[in-house]
Length: 214
Image (tube, rainbow, N blue to C red; front, side, top):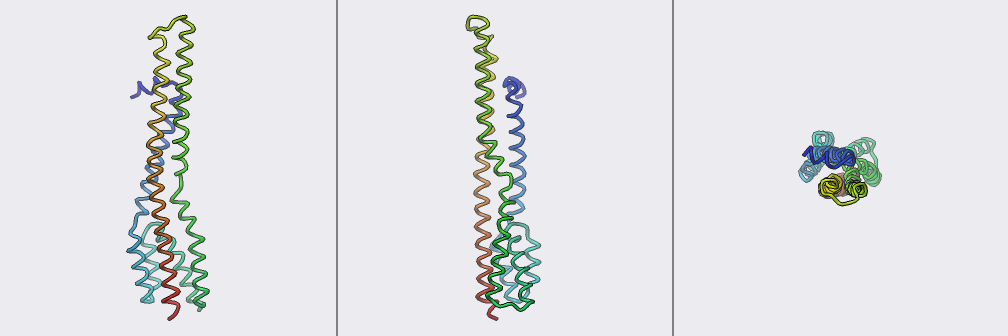
């Protein structure tokens, strides 16, 4: 493996750097999404049951106990709900304020889920280009040898051709997993966004249609 990297010439230096960066991003996102993967349905059910029993503080504690984007958004909404209930606000005011609070906070949670995914796209785009650059420089090196010798000799041009092939392969090997990882992670983020929307809607519906009427 080391020999193949060395055969790729100096273009392999940024390619190796991009491969390390891609691996680091993938590991970081896998760990982040593992923490975020909570049972959103179970959390919603627990929160609704606690609110129905007038246990808003316990509902807030449940959100604090859970980790993940849904819990974070519900937490700020419940904290606002508790504050407005203690102030004796109307149902319409509670609905508007709680909805606005969760809507304003949700983009921050989503941004955290999408963090560094753009790096995977950048790596996927740049790696093949660097590989092609290595191909060009390798072929230039090979034909320069031909020009120097005045004839094509296998041993003389082998180094340039090897450089061309290695960098091309390296660029593709780096880009393909980066694209696949980005697509997988993007689908996970979409799932989290849907969970957030469903949870916030269910909470608002319950607060406005049930709790605020009591």
